[in-house]
Every structure is written in structure tokens, then in C-alpha cells.
Image: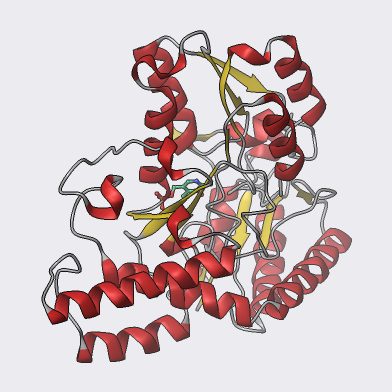
Length: 385
Ligand SMILES: Cc1ncc(COP(=O)(O)O)c(C=O)c1O
């Protein structure tokens, strides 16, 4: 079996599994907010996890607010920056055209509920947000912008965004920069202190840790307001008894990534060889081909062959990939991200996402190549559109 949906959810990494076996067997289990000895021991493990996470991303422990993951984190940051009378005069939200629904739907909510105007920054053909267009939008009236939200790497294409440049622009114009780093941190070296980002996000299940655990990185945590009120946990920024074992697994996964950074380069090389071979043999299109991309992400299309047909064919060979296509009336459509890049339907409908991680087996790309070659040869004879 080859699991190639790391961008959807990564399997627990080996080090996390080993850690959990011991952790679950031996404890400690307690409420980390209890003042008895076991509570304090549990809290110490959780605070150690915070310190490890902070060190691996170049942040301070106090800049980490543990939560359930990126959707919650993004919602809390939007709430903190936009809800109520926090923004007299600043009524515009700028977002890229390739954001995850966790960002798009928040922007839509604050537009409907609080009267913000959402402006979508154009996307270039290579899948990167157009920084010059963003500059022009901001420069026309910086004092009206309440926030800029542009992700660090796209979940479909893996295209890495010019987030540092965007951060610098935001910093120089005094606009909060919210950067969805869910697909970036834990897959690519990252330093929060040098990023010019005000708020960033991690979801444990994207980095080989447990699902339902994550954190916000906040340059200035005093700007946050609690979305979940509760009893003062996380310095009153996120109520509810903490998922301390989940947080510990993030620390283990992030630390493992830190120790094995060379694996990312290796993965990138293998991905490039894999794509080169495919391009030589088939008339395929690789989305964001000439842009910097995550080491293990290929979003590929063979125009004329439905992505879903390829997905099913690969599944019969025990290989698990995804398409980005939302299916309605058996009419798979081109994803919003690809549309923003100007990709036409004949290419968009064929899209298949193959996403691996540093812990994928060494021969994963070789096996996927053989299976994909078989699938394209078979389906190419009965092209579906
Ligand atoms: C770019 C991006 N942002 C946000 C999210 C939401 O993460 P979660 O479902 O862990 O809250 C995802 C998950 O797919 C994602 O890929």
C-alpha cells in the first residue's frame, strides 16, 4: 500500500507512534491545570512540548497557543481582528484567490455579519499570489485594510507563496498579516521570527502528529481574544482542558522533522525525477510546474482523462491519491484554486494530487510511477472528455 494523501492528513510518524506507546502505558494522566503533583507533572510535559514546538519554528513559547488545529486557529484570529468595534475605518479584508475554505469562509462570514469588503488578490499562472497586484491594492488605501490573509503553501498544488515579501509589505503598512502555514510548517524549514507573519497555524495531523491538536503562532498574543472562553486555560486565550497528549505528539513530530531535514531534499529530488519521467512519456500538465513547491506535492493532469478515473484505477493498485474535483451530477469540475490560476476545464478535470511526506517509503515514487503509467495507458485508450 502506498499512501499518497499527506496533504489531506499525514500518517503518524514512527517516532510519534513509539512515543505514544510508552506515553499511554506509563502516563502521567491528569488535568494539567490541577495543582497536585500529577497535574504539575502533566503540565510540565505540556510546557516542554510548547518549548520544543517554539524552538523548532523559531518562536517564543509564549507565542504558541495550543488548540484543536488550523480551522480553529484561523477562526480565532479572524474573530480577534475583525469582530465588533475593533476596526473603525478599516473595513477591507484582502485574501489570495487560492486560500483554503477555512480562510475563505471566515472572510465571507465577516463580510456578511460585520460588513467587511473582501478583495481577492489575483493569482499568477504559476500558482503564486501576485505580489505586485497586492502592493497596488494596499497602496491605494492602506488605512482601510483590516488584514491580509495569504497562505504559505497551497494544499492542492504545493506552490510556495512569497509570504516573506508579503509580510514585509504588511509590516511597512501596519496591516496584520495572517498566513495559513498549515501545509508549510513541518514540511519545509520555517522561522517565525524571520517570517514577518503576525499569525501562523499548525495542525498536528498534517505533520505526523495526532489529529485534533494544533496551535496558533502569534507574534503578539495580546492581540488575540478567546473564541472558546472557558476557565482561563492557555492564558485565557483558549478555554477548555488541554489535549496535552496531542500537543506532546506535535512536539515529537516537529522535533523529528528538525532532525531529518535532509529527507525533505531527498523527497524533492525524487519528486522532480518522477515528474520528469511522466512528462517525457505522457502529455501531462503539472500545476505550478515552474514555481517553488513543497517537496512531496505533485498536482498532475492528463487532459482528457478524468482525475477520478485515475484515482480509482490507482486505488485498485493499492495507491491512495486524491483529486480536487467536487463532483456534481457526475460532472467533475475544476477546483477554485486551479481556476484562480487560469487553468482550463480540460486540464482541471484531469487533476490528481499525489502528496507524500518525509516519512514516506523510499520507493514510493517508483511504485506510483509504475501504477500511474499503467493507469494512463489504459485510460488513454478510452478518453472520457
Ligand atoms: C491550507 C490548509 N489550511 C487549513 C486547513 C484546515 O486544517 P484542519 O482541518 O486541520 O483544521 C487545511 C486542511 O486541509 C489546509 O490544507
